[in-house]
Amino acid sequence: MEIKVQANYIKTSPKKLRLLVDMVRKMNVDKAIIQLKFSDKKINQDLLHLVKSAKDAAKAKNLDEEKLYIKTITCNQGPSIKRAIFNSRGRMNRIKKRMSNVELIVSDAEVLKKDKKNIKENKVNTKNKDVKKVASVKRK
Image (cartoon, rainbow, N blue to C red):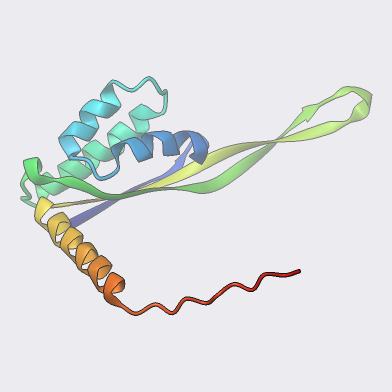
């Protein structure tokens, strides 16, 4: 069973948030919580809150907490606030204050094992297919 949670309008850029998202992807939920607690980044509190809420939602649906894994976690760009900074000679530059949207899907360990088997079977099937190679033509 899968549980989906979202956090919208997090006030940090997606580039900074993706560093933490990549760190906890495909990880056990308990290990991810420990990893986020000891992270140096300021934004880890928002991501930690999201992972804990996914764990609580799984507990409410009577799923085993020890078998929970982060199946997918994506970080997308949200709306950006435009601000102005004034320069000399009457000029003005724009500053974009970016926001992020994070989507987290948590599932049982059994579901992940089934997905891995399907991926391995697809890789084996693609290797056995006959692939036509096109010869490249050298130009003079």
